[in-house]
Figure (tube, rainbow, N blue to C red):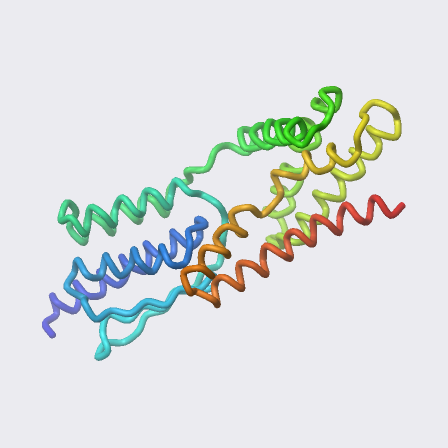
Length: 251
């Protein structure tokens, strides 16, 4: 293989692995990541490539004769805009609208850009979500301001602790614990009326909905390792939330 061909192959592998890493770190399903990487490889005449994706890492082999590459997944969050942008780049590469170098440069820009809303915008969205779920669950309109405040408070506490400790289960436990205390105080002092709907509504922004959805979709697609690991992560998150509330209600 010539030096030019070797350089192009390395660029292609870097491009495919970068696309897969961004998608996995942003909350994409495992089968979607594998399909995207295989399609990108096919556009570069790597028709015998193989890809194996888990929540912890990605392995990609361009062919049976060439070495397999591996990239570690260290961070996992939810940023579906980044997933959509990577999918757009992959489609343009497959359609011939992007060269390999253009696709790699665009993916580097996506990787280095923060597309998430400011923390206060996210907190406001969490507050509105909590208030809406309170009404949806049959709660009293009197409790709506408390759900609005408690939902936002729990969300920003979880995000702050997660930023400092990187331990999601601990952050979820503390967030649920504080929400439970605030809701109990509001009800027992007579300002709020229904403890159950107030707690449930305030905790809805913390529920691992995307994890549960992706776990089920991966299992249905036959990706049992990823499906079970994501399901276990969702279970532990739900357990941490439940444990935080249980500690409060046990007093």
